[in-house]
Amino acid sequence: MTAFDDEVRAIRRLSRQIRASAVTMLHHTRMGHAAADMSAADMLSVLYGGVLRGRHDDPDRDRFVLSKSHAAAALYSVLSTRGCLPADELLTLGQPNSRLCAAASTRTPGVEFNTGALGHGLPLAVGCAIAAKMDGSSRRVYVLTGDGELQEGSNWEAAMLASTKKLDNLLLMVDRNRFQKGASTEDISALEPLADKFRSFGWAVETVDGHDVAALLTMLRSAPLEPGRPTCVLAETIKGKGVSFMEQRLEWHSRRFTDEELELALAEICEGSDD
Image (cartoon, rainbow, N blue to C red):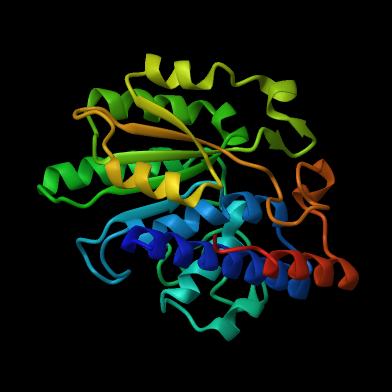
């Protein structure tokens, strides 16, 4: 067993913890987008478990922007494991006077930007990356978008600018689960060939299994993929990953759990393996 193997096992445990916490939060508060939290959980666990440098209060820390803000429960869950907020506060999600808004909010320690409106996270991350270059800082900027929100034109304006400014300190992860509210992305407004589109905008692009923790960890640590170019990682994911009755089911974009469904979901999540 190598040190890398130990890291991967620890990150897989963190993924299960994020999933269990997120579904528990959403059942308790009767709100949220559980399937989006499930598809993003492994990317968040890799980022916070093995990639991001610096504590949330370190001014020269790496920055992370959650653009697919409807996965806020997963983000709050991982921030809790990193000491940004107490675990018992997670059950206040969306309640009056809570620091945990339904969409990611800077009221929560560790959240860098308010990103409730889809399509804004990448432009904000581009600004962060430009600022880091101007400061002569080694900090890196990571942003996670949903695939459906790439239908917003603001993303492509940001993509052009990132390439023009040679932002090789910027890494975009796309949660490519191919579903959005109501239908598949390709039925609503087709994104393919997505990799070719980003390459045509001057980005270095790779595709990875978004649930393969070892592959994600290796790829994110190897960034930038090409000096002088921003990096785009297309993470092929399964919406609702980890809970069989949620996986790739459109109705789970924003459906609420019954008590019985929560029990089944937690049982499946806890049965997951570290290997």
